[in-house]
Amino acid sequence: MATSVLHPAIFFDRDGTLIEDRGFLHTPEEVFFYEDAFLSLRTLKDHFLLFIVTNQPGIGRGILRPEEVESVNQYVVQRLALEGITISGVYFCPHTREQRCVCIKPNPYFLLKAAEEFGVDLSRSFVVGDHPHDVETARNVGAKGIYLLTGHGEKHLDELNPNAYVAKNLKEAIAYILKQDVLPSREVHEAAEIIRKGGVVAFPTETVYGLGADAFNPLGVARIFEIKQRPFFDPLIVHVAHLRALDQLVKSVPSIALCLIEKFWPGPLTLVLPKREEVPEIVTAGLPNVAVRMPKHPLARSLIEQSGCPMAAPSANPFGYVSPTTAEHVRDQLGDQVDLILDGGPCEVGVESTIVSFVEKAPTLLRPGGVPLEEIESLIGKVEVRLGEEKVSAPGMLPKHYAPRTPILIHWSKESLKVYQNKKIGFLAFQKAGNGLQRFDHVEVLSRQGDLREAAANLFSAIRRLDALGLDLILAESVPEIGLGRAIMDRLRRASHTLPQ
Ligand code: TXA
Ligand code: MG
Image 1: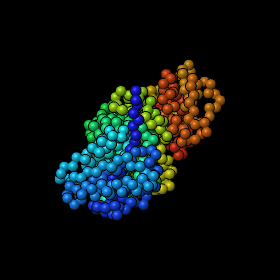
Image 2: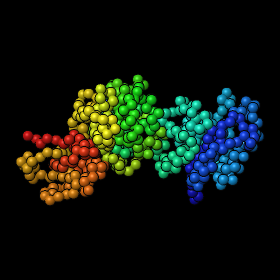
Image 3: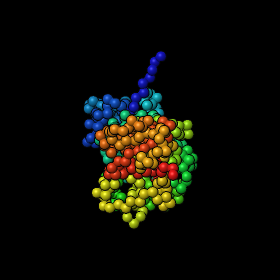
Image 4: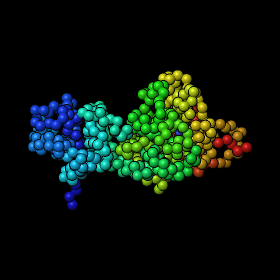
């Protein structure tokens, strides 16, 4: 049986992307390629089928003749061929908007036609253009739209979906495309469609796995609470892929917050800022503020871009349990309840984002996390620390928030352990396992080198492994409270119990 191989493709809007937009072009003499066009396309030609799509309403309006458009197109294709670049096909739309064009805007007709004629895998394909409809057209078929600031790009920027990727020029777009190609984008496409329809998807971030829904769809968000069995008074973090999306969510960003954004986004830092009215109450638990972060993980970013909506997402664990750092963890606990789980491997950071609030008199740390407090303070000066308050702004900081089923102790004495004499005890060690550990039924070491970053990355998996062994008690060694050690100790304290009196 013949197998058909599907190819990834890139569709370029002709004017404003490959060649300068100089109005209606009648002859090849009027064609001026952008400086970076040849080099950019040459780096792509071995990986993608290349197409040109162009909107020529001048024909519909009687200003241009189809032959003129053909001759310009032909010239563009031949000139590229001289540079060793093959264009597989050129599609042009002769209609004006009034003629109810069915070719491109935002109808993906050309893309579907190319997919059929050339065996294009649209989910691994891109549309590059300087008009918001290029991005929408791409989205409609599960391809990825890339918006350029060349041509009319600057002019129409405010009509663009703020979650779309924007590139300064072709060169930047191509660098981005080459990075994206490694992603399993068929799955991301499916996930994005689920999100757009109000569904719930578990996805990887660099900190922990999140359970996401469209932040502007209260019903989708409600399902997150239902799945997690999370009380409605505990607000969610909203994830964005691009800075422009902040405008949809917050009223203002103080300059010191911007300073942190510049340095730590994308990355494990969440900022609490005054929310815009449009952000649904269910997301913020009725608070006038919203927590926002821009994750670094390429799958998270790709999912947000592709779905076109900011993503409300708590960690993907049942309420009160440790956060998941692998897709497996999510599958084990929430598997059949979520619509899809995107697997991006183990999370690099392993503990949740650092949360800093900018709605108090002074910047306030609400949760230590992936960005060390020291690094934040070195940029913006002293930050107030307010952890573990239950009623105010971070109800997620409930004392028992990260508790496994097995009791964990971080403080103990020989005396206090007497009741556990004949019981099964596990040990969560920070560094190398030392003497005297034979007494334990199982030992987990967070980082043999004593590296706090490595320890943080391993923390939740290690707790889960210990928790699965049916032990009676887990003893956890303290780590130095510097850098990521602060987040580790915070989670251990929340997970820990006091001994029964
Ligand atoms: O790294 C992370 O932050 C992960 C990944 C998935 O991004 N997310 C995460 O979300 O840890 P969650 O829901 O498990 O924890 C969010 C914390 C909660 O403690 C919540 O109370 C607090 O953020 N929070 C959310 N919105 C807030 C707001 N408007 N004001 C104050 N705290 C807020
Ligand atoms: Mg959580």
